[in-house]
Structures are given as structure tokens and as C-alpha cells.
Image 1 (tube, rainbow, N blue to C red):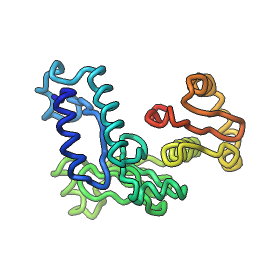
Image 2 (cartoon, rainbow, N blue to C red):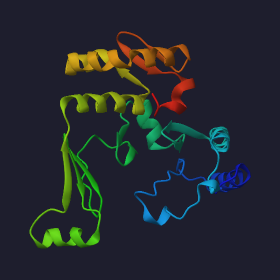
Image 3 (cartoon, rainbow, N blue to C red):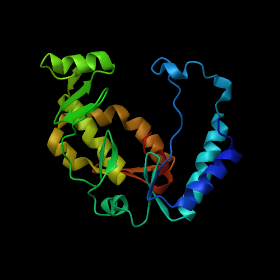
Length: 221
């Protein structure tokens, strides 16, 4: 229900508060998942053109207010630990978002919580009745699990490097994953070359670097 005018007012009020970090993202309409949103009318949502205008305004105003763009809609003040972590190449990304903490397992507690333990991904039950019943039976409240394959681990390492550092050392990944990486990149090479032609990234045999013009599109890359 935002308009460009209302968004400008809201953003100005937030900037006045000077929070250390700001996360800016679009509303995702998923009535099949969230019952409370089923009565929302689609014609009340902002148009694509208005959303792009809001995002452009936010990038300009937050930059002018001393915020650095981290990625995926995350902004932080210049003295924030996320900014220094990126400069020191120790920034991390997990299901909880960006972090400057060392890489570690993630244990999710509560209904629907997600855990990441090594190559294993788990999710707890999402309804209260079954979530509470499982521990009473001496069982974990987990209802879904997935052990990531070597290719999925390679894709995660590749994307994490881009999300956190805007670049990836392809030679280092190839030493780790071998033919998996070569096959993975071969399929995507035409799209990456088009992005390179558009000035969004620099692609060589040994590295892939997202250029300043492409950093707001890091998710797409």
C-alpha cells in the first residue's frame, strides 16, 4: 500500500532515527502460504515502476545519509561491523542474513525454524499441536530434512562468495570441487557473458567479480 510519496516520508523518518542497519525488501504476496493475506486485493499493491522508483530513492537517500550497501537490500552505517567485515573479507551469509560471526552451525528453535548443521538442512513442524506433541513422544520437532549434495554445497560456496564479497575465486573453488564447478559454469556461461557485456560483472578464467553497477543486482547474479 505504499506510494512513492508515502515511502519518501517513511524513509526520511527512519533516517532521522539513524539505526545501525536497515533491511529494505519488497512485500511478497503468498496467499497459498499465509492465510491472513488471502483477502488482500492485488490492485492495492504498488506497481513495478513505483517499486523501482522507491528502491532508487532509497539507495540515493541512504547513501547520502552515510549508509553502505551490503547486499540483498541490507544497508549499514559506515562504522558498522558488517562493513568492516566485508572489507576484511570475513563477512558471512546464512538463512538469518548477513553476519560478521565466524561460520558455524545454525540451530533453529521454535515452530517452523530452520537449522543448518554441516550439509544437513532441517525444518521444525509449523503447527503448534504437532510441534508440542513431538517432544512429549521423546522426538525432535523436525518434520523435514535434506542432506545437501556435493553440487549443492558447491553452489552454496559460490553464491555465498558473491553475496559477501562481490567476487569469487573460481580457481580455489575448482581445486575444491573439480568438474562439478566446470560443468556448473559451462551451463551458465552465456548468461554471465551477457551480464559482463552489460557492465554488471567481470568474468575471467580465474575469477568472477560483480562490478559497482551490478551490486544492487547481486541476488540476480
